[in-house]
Image (cartoon, rainbow, N blue to C red; front, top):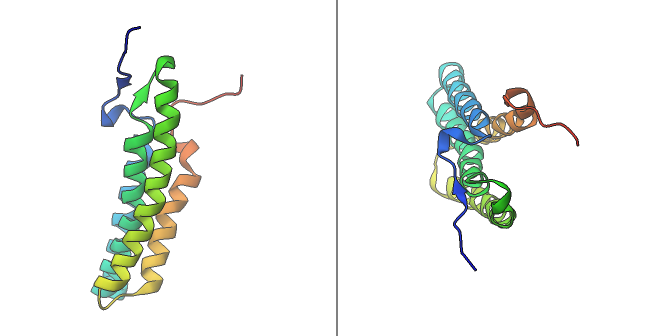
Length: 135
């Protein structure tokens, strides 16, 4: 029996790449707006919140969307589970590190930009080039 390694896609070819870029642009713009209107503490707190939302999504994407093809079905399922578990753990660790290590902190800006970054996921189907249809 021949063992084959699944096909790996480059980062820019992942289906989720436009969503990750939209999240990054959103968090950078929100942090910049907070910095300008509410000062540097709100700006870097917003940046921390956006990165807490974005970095685990990048980790999940790197685990879940690196394989393609029908022969890689088992690897895809395994990587989705591993990616989701890692995403949840990474989010909790980043929140804990932020609250322990970043002083002073503007919690409203932190959670606001975190939620704004997560909202991009809700609108992800509008950002995707390929449309998935039901069989």
